[in-house]
Image (cartoon, rainbow, N blue to C red; front, side, top):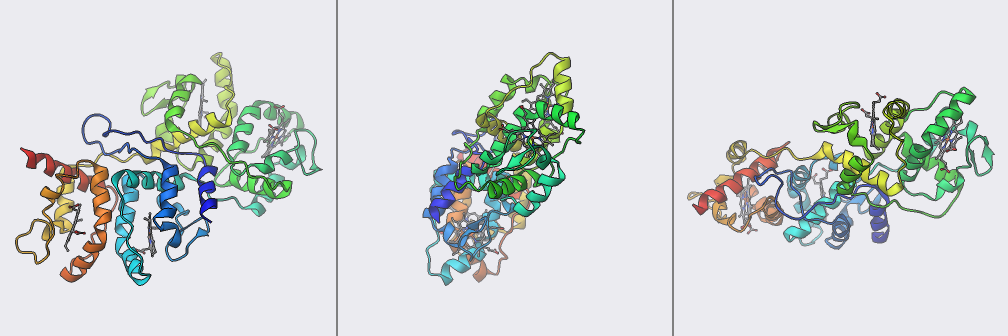
Length: 399
Ligand code: HEC
Ligand code: HEC
Ligand code: HEC
Ligand code: HEC
């Protein structure tokens, strides 16, 4: 099971190349750039026992929720907040099952979070029945054969049944798109568009109908390489990202939403208009390898999920509201909680703070129950704010 999960980890597209070092810009923008390896994170996910309770798309334990669902489509700090929010529920089970709460070193936490982020980026496995319907409705069957049955206008698609990731399909569709559009015009077939889960569903059908037992996984994408490709392939000449770049096409950091496959689908859907614009401007339609497609769409995907910078002033309010101070550094508390101003001496980065919060969550759960403090659930942005505040307290305490 563990092996299959590791393979599942490779089958998707985006591996976020989180670089080492402090946050960009010199100040505490908490759009953290963690030193992290999602692959290492997938190893830890099994080694630390998470997989014993959590499945990913149906593979793994069932005591906790399946983490392949969409809860993890969010910025990294928000993923840390989700783990924190569910700490008491998990603690309950740790005790019931007599397992020790897994603790982490900060670099391990970084890898784990990168892995969880990566899980959130994967499209759920497709639905082959729906795919079969789409294959007919969208006219694919009229032009393409699958295992000997179907049209002969385009190539037989049986060889695509060995691919475990829809990335291969989208890359081929992009590269052959213009010739396909011409064939469609000649046959008077409307050009299909792709929405929602269409692409994974189509692949699920092709995999089943093609009958190949092989599973070829997609190369993990790197947003960092994607950024470079975006300029090299001249996308940047027409598109801006966050205001920088060309104005011929839409700003892709602002406009694009959705999963990796939905982004690839948007490229296909807007293909004809792009080709015309490219022709007008004397730009060749760039051919993309599977790796390059993977890098490009994971780069574009990333923009949806950058943590907005935390705000120490708001964080101070969160600290009060959530009553962290009723234990930490309080003279009247019966609880021996370390004053956080002192504790954060050793907690110099957002990563160190959230790792400590997770590692100590077990003790805190018990004490909060004793002290009648409700578990402080952190909502959108509050984790980032709180951490910004704690790090500022630390700066202040040094003076
Ligand atoms: C003993 C079983 C158990 C283990 C081990 C465990 N969890 Fe959980 N986890 C749970 C349960 C139960 C919940 C739901 C708790 C609740 O409802 O508050 C949960 C909730 C979560 C959630 C929130 C999911 C959601 O959909 O909101 C995340 C994320 C999570 N766990 C991550 C992890 C990670 C990462 C590890 C390994 C370090 C881990 N868990 C280990 C039982 C476990
Ligand atoms: C009007 C006919 C037509 C329709 C409809 C059509 N295709 Fe194609 N398709 C073609 C042709 C022709 C090519 C080869 C283009 C070339 O020569 O580069 C092609 C190429 C492809 C390729 C690349 C194959 C390879 O070996 O690289 C894939 C994948 C593909 N089509 C999938 C689809 C899917 C999925 C659908 C339905 C959503 C579809 N096609 C609908 C005619 C069509
Ligand atoms: C010659 C200019 C040009 C180039 C080069 C170009 N695009 Fe586009 N792109 C456009 C235009 C114009 C649109 C809007 C098309 C429409 O409205 O249908 C568009 C639309 C898109 C969309 C859909 C946006 C949405 O809102 O759904 C995506 C995704 C996209 N382009 C990605 C890329 C990528 C990736 C590259 C580089 C490989 C690229 N484009 C290169 C002009 C260009
Ligand atoms: C009910 C009392 C209580 C409350 C309320 C509380 N904590 Fe704690 N906290 C503790 C105790 C006790 C420890 C030490 C636990 C241990 O040693 O495992 C601790 C440890 C920590 C640590 C690790 C410190 C270190 O030395 O590594 C951090 C960070 C932390 N808490 C943050 C918070 C934040 C943020 C809040 C508010 C959202 C909060 N705590 C609310 C009791 C509390």
